Image 1 (spheres, each protein chain N blue to C red):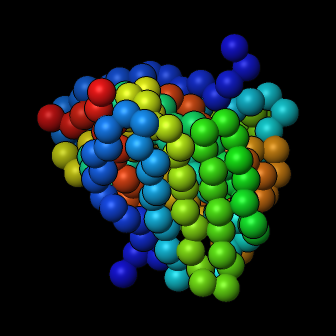
Image 2: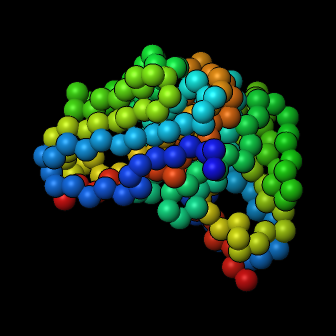
Length: 108
Length: 113
């Protein structure tokens, strides 16, 4: 069992839909990261959070420490949101432990 | 551009050859990380440095792999006697401290024939 698990693995949505990607982790963490990866490999950090909720534009990330669960929400999705979204955890060491990613395709 | 850079971006080599990759972190960042990502999977941790000291190495890092950060700035990752299973994207990231946001480079895609 992977220490960080994401669902769903693949997600197709129509433009404008509200999207939720879930992440569960089984270890104690100091922070939870949401990352975006476009074709070609480049990874961009979207959020780093250790409690509560953060919002940036149409993206919202939440974390529940007691339940070891985090969600990434995208409001009013757009085709340019199509990418792989990766959840990663920082434990007692500062290295990241990654989930396998959620491949999102937003269609017109 | 002051982001993390990696060279080369692509490397094709024959099995048994040695390859070396370079990562230049954001200049004031003291932490540097190497990760490996195979197709369809999330990245996996390989090793990381604080300044020039290599603080942790993954069990994934066999004896054929070696990483250095001699002056606490750029880092190199060398793979000796490459195998087809080494084919992957090698990602470098840097941060300004242990639990701060990590900034990723574009990666080096290695193909071993």
